[in-house]
Each structure stands twice: as C-alpha cells, then as structure tokens.
Length: 343
Image (cartoon, rainbow, N blue to C red):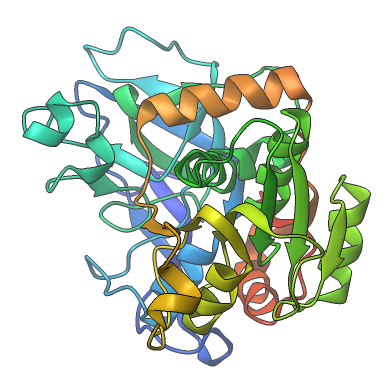
C-alpha cells in the first residue's frame, strides 16, 4: 500500500484525462494522493471493480467529465482499511460495496419523498469523485453496502450497478405478475435483470445484436433470443431498453401489447427518431426513463440476488488492462460483465 512523501495514501490506477475513443488513450495510468477519510468516510482496499458502460460513456466524452483526471469505476468491492471518526456501520476488515450513487442532499423535495435518485445535488462515484479503477478509494459510509464475506468479489462487483440499475429498470417497466418482458441489449445489467425476472415468474424474450449474448440469454432462462430489430414471438407487457441506441425505441414500443410499458435504462442514449403516435404510443403504451437509483433499490436488489441465487457472468481483467477492458466492452466482446482485479 503506497504512501507519498507526506504520508498520504496513494491510489494507483487509471484516470480519464482527455475523453475520446478508448483505443486512442482516453485512460491513462496515474498515482494520486488520496484525501484522508472524512468523518463519515471509509478508506477501502479494492478487491474488484466492475466495468460499466457508464465508464465507457465518461471515457469517450458522452458524459462530460466533472473533474480533471477522475478515476472511474463504481462497482467496487473491497475491504475497509480505515474509518472516519464518526463511522458507525463498518470496522476495518469488513467487506463493503461502493456503487454509483455516493451522495444526496437529504433535504430537497425529492429526497424527502423517497426519490433521492432525482436529487438535484446528487453525486456519483467515478464521476464526481474518484472510483474503483485503482487499488484504493475513499467512499461515504452512508452510501456503502455490506457484502458477503465469503463470496468471490469478481461476481459481487457487477451487482453494485449493473444489478441495481437493472432492478430499478425492471420496476420502472411495470412488469405484471407472470408477464411477458422484452430486453433490448444484453450486457451486464440485462443478464442480471433477466435472472430476477425469471425467478419472479416472468417470460423473458431477449433482443440483441450479439449472437454470443443470445446464447448466454438462453442459458440463463430466456424463452427466446433474437436479433435486436426482430419482433419478439409474442406481444410484450413490458420492455427494457439497455442498449444506448435511440432508434430501437420505436422498435421496442411497437413490440408492446396494449397498455405496455417501455423503460429506457441507460444514462446516455443516441437520438430517438420521430415516433408515430398511432403505431408507437396509442392504446396507452408508456415510455419511461430510468434515472440512477435509491439506496433502497440497492438494498432490495442485493436481497433478491441472494434469495434468488442471481450470479454474474464475468470476464476477468487485471487492473493493468483496464483500457483493454473498455475497448472490449465498446466492441461487444464481453460476455456478461467485465471486472477488474488487482494486478
């Protein structure tokens, strides 16, 4: 564990310096002094960090950076090394998880209504503050989840964003009991959401361009798996668009039965083409977005993942290969979720 000349801990990992195509060096290796944990913070030694498509959007400039040389990564599994003076939930040695949402004001009307995901003052790990593409990171105690001590950290990491946001998208899709669900795109989030939906009695149809992803979907319990622009074999009660492809919105809406709901799960989406009211929205079809998550979403999903035996399919990379992991994600060469592990 490195320290600098002033005795501060040093995070060694990767940062976004000049957003652009990942194959052109958007990520650079860094060694950054870490601030001492604040009163309500924990210093964490990273055991694993999932690679999320949001990290790719940040690296390539689809999301404007909120700081210089920000270390991405918000699917963090690690062990507490130090605690701030007012930390009460965790002690050194405890395994914890750091996720995307890292702070809200607690005072606005959204926070007071239990909708902290809409807080105008929300902050995010790996965007507003350094994340988990490093060996050490500092996380706020109040936004950290306790994790099982005996599980493989690589399989836990994707649960902390892909799983949580997939769970919120599932709830936003208004899937009825025993309903017919369509998943458009089948990466890290979708392969976890599918397992929850199947365990809770849904029939799931997967629509995705990747033949390998279609094979994985069938192995995980999908009723069918077809190309992204194909029609599902039956009308859908609900659908979730995980692919950041706006021109799939009309395709998914047209696949809905009367009264169906489409939830768009990504933080970034390419332009949506004009919609035909009669074909796409009439007969009370709903189109909804999904914005971040609440801590309640996180706790609820992690509980369901444990009860339903949800398991991540992972492709492992050394931390030193984080740039290659993002390149593979961009090129759809990752089965399930990519996860970075200490060198």
